Length: 252
Image (tube, rainbow, N blue to C red; front, top):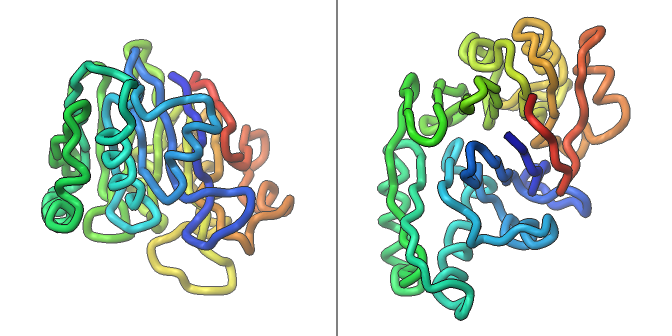
């Protein structure tokens, strides 16, 4: 398994961090996890292309995690001479995504309808287990109604966990337990109550309890984005790093 960070920031624009978006290469498949603003441009910077994408997983439906879906399928429609092979891309997201997708189609439908890449919404819910080219376990997250935590398991039993956006919960610790790589958000400020997000101390608590082999901090609030964040979130003798856009990490 290999993880590529396309965007490690929040909705607040900064020069060096794009909106949340990630590429996971697992068992010969290319998975786009979240699709925030700038994801397509970041793919190009990472020397990847949209035509590689096999599946899309959305942790929740907020704008900073989903908005580039429309430009993605618009590009599939109008970027000619790339491929003649048709592929149906499965979008895995909460059941409520069908409502949002219908709304988008009412506005942009004819510009999203590509002869090269179709899409199909596959609803997923907490505690679902799917067997395909890899195993996926889902857990509810304390953020919005549609929020999910993903645990991907490959054929070597290597485990990658993505927290999405969430407060500190037992579900998060359970999902992250003994993960080979944990990608966890940190956009909650220590001196402010921001519902549905993790503060540095919360992240440290998760790492201490779940004991992942390696942890990458992402979705970093600009006011936390400094050298102090590492020591604030890192228990002793743990492998923790701050995500960097376009960085590639091996799982396991």
